Image 1 (cartoon, rainbow, N blue to C red):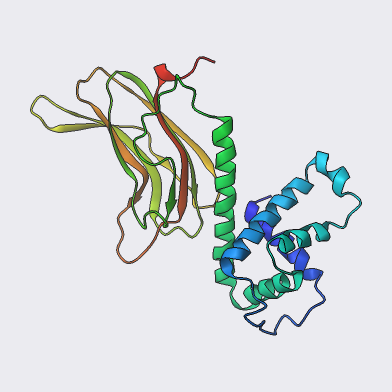
Image 2 (image 1 turned 120 degrees about the vertical axis):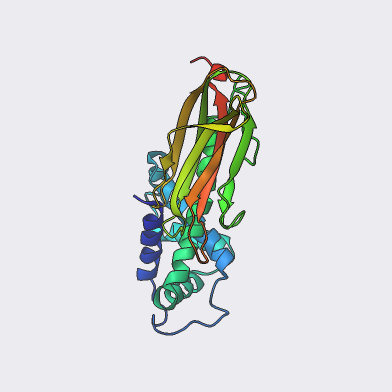
Length: 260
């Protein structure tokens, strides 16, 4: 089940159980949960739903109404179920676009948690030299509005180079043809730049995390460099923003990979 859809199902379940005021009645500010806190609650609600799916946890919660577990999550953040219910009705009935952005933030939180776990499970071995020179992860538009995340790395030995990254492009991303672009750059006999492009990877705007991996071999060319853009795009006019996450970035030489 898609993460956003599961969060939606859980919140609808909680709203159905409500015996509070009418959906058309706008709740007071005192009853509405602040957006940042709502994101935290929805993130923990999804994690709770996932835990209740675990066989090892079913026995613990089997004798208890599952709705009570979600109400406990809300209470742990200092709010009542009535406040949560009023807040969700407010967004569902009057602010659906804002609610969609809130769900995107929740998805981003869950992606970061997933990436942390994956990074720990797939930690780079000491023998695997990571050549990536930038940050370990990027959040767009938080870090950059339109930046394609350029890189330029000297490559000292011939052979196969591998680029890996976990990339998620949200469905409201406004970039044109988002993709991963990489190439070897070197100078010819008269000093002009020559480029040996890797296979480009085009990225779907569907909110799904993808484990991107591309590779290419370099001949023995002194002074060669590996260049490219982790989140390349076509030029377009007007005001627009990217909405994506890039994590667990690695560039390695095949000889430096650990022996399986």
